[in-house]
Amino acid sequence: MEEEEDRQMAANSELRYITLELMKIAQKSGKSFDEVAEEFISNADKLQKMIYGEENAHKSGLKAVRTKK
Image (cartoon, rainbow, N blue to C red):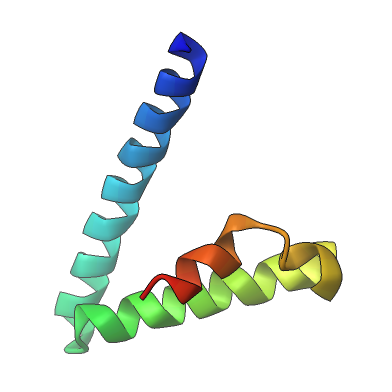
């Protein structure tokens, strides 16, 4: 149970870091946060497909993240 809590805390920490970085990029570029975040997710999805292939990429959490909008 404690290991799962540690993983969740680590994931939340990473998400906060990514969010702050995307906010900085949005501010510097003049784009909205939504535009920058969508581009980030698209790029991460594309990279995952390139690494693992189309079939395995869809088994990951990235597809779930994209559909939760």
